[in-house]
Amino acid sequence: MCVFLPCIHEIAKNFSNTEIDLLTKKRTSSKDFLDQDKYINNIYYLPDEKGIKLNFSVLKLLKNKKYENIFIMHYGLRYYLLSLLAGAKKIYFYGILKKNESIVKKSRLSVSEWLGKTDLKFEPIIFLNKEYKKKLQITIGIGGSGHNKKWKVKNYKNLLNNILDRNPLSSIIVAGGLSEYDEANLLSDYIKEKFNIDIINLSKMSIVNCLPYLAESKFYIGNDTGFMHLSACLNVPSFGIFGATPPDYSSYNSLIYAITPPGVKHVNYGDEMMNEITPEYIYKFLRDKKYVVWTIITFYNFLSNLWKV
Image 1: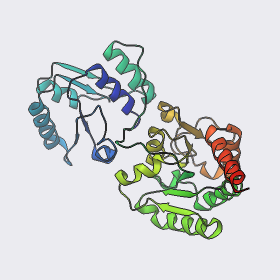
Image 2: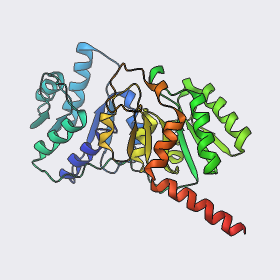
Image 3: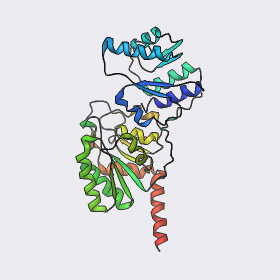
């Protein structure tokens, strides 16, 4: 959903003073992080049905809402035909047969063509009702939809040793799902014992409650996971570890920095190269980037010490 969000916003801007609804799958959790979106009016989840039952449910929704324009951002005939039956005046869709192409490029080229504009901005933004100031904290993303996408906890310990020895922080956000709760606790206990700083474990929090913590972080470093995308869309520089998934689709957001194995630019699904990415390699990546966030942390520490003197 984060990948398509810039396109959705550009479509909405082109239809100002028009109700904009989003129909998507429940697994996107869109209601949890788009409820404050200033462009989207309503979010509907596809029902947990299949075949004819699903068709009838979607058709009923489309007919009741009487949409004039429907944008279908994927391939296939089902939703095109349902939109046609529902009486939509204009239907935009990719086509029937799926092609091997970049989903980022395809979505943006399609929307530009549909709207007849070439100057679209495609800014990936998650809107929050409150402005959250950056704290002297970072987010560590240990979660992942598959075990092969996860960097080992011991690696995060070693990475944090490098970071915290040189750049003291006030707190660490550990981001993962319920399945990572125990791992998050292990990492949290280690950090507390060694560095005596505040740890916030997001593993049992709802996405809604996680957003402020992510937004307050100086940067995100962790697996290719939902927390990486959410952080980047909250204007947080996000360093993603890509050793088992292709980093190409993260190109929709200039704040996502893909860290791939040494000497490897293209990673594909099924590649098992997470172990080839070492803590030292990642720390060097962060240091060599000379990212402004790193400078801010160092400068903050300098001022703090100067104030103490």
